[in-house]
Amino acid sequence: MNILTSSDTWFRPSDVCVGPDGALYVADWNDGRRGRPQHGGRDLATMTGRVYRVAPPGFKSMPPRLDLKTAKGCVEALQSPNLSARYLAWTALKEMGDKSEANCENFGAAKTIPA
Image (cartoon, rainbow, N blue to C red; front, side):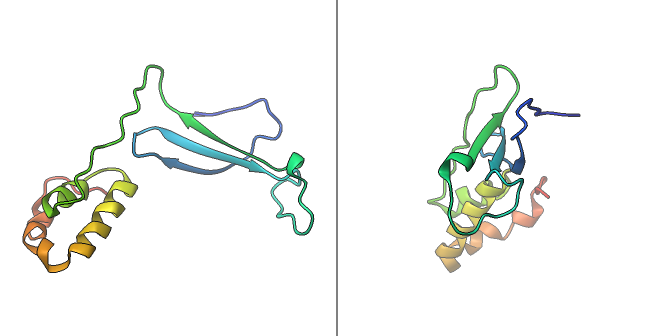
């Protein structure tokens, strides 16, 4: 199934990810040389990049509200399907150190743990 197509012959997707709002983001880059890195002089007129947001019609972008100030909020954020939210939660818990331990003890008993 094609979820993003283009009649633009310069369209070359280079990266894709799911944003924290649930939309799909596709990066498109070209330097006029079909994917080969250009060393030396760079002509900005031939170097372009775009980011496409792919979402169903009527999609309302709503980034998750994360409580990264408390260990309990961080443990809840660890259960998010979004990798960025989980990374931010993990980083905050790591900075809290031993103060977060009591809230983390039951994390493995959660019903749903993202892959």
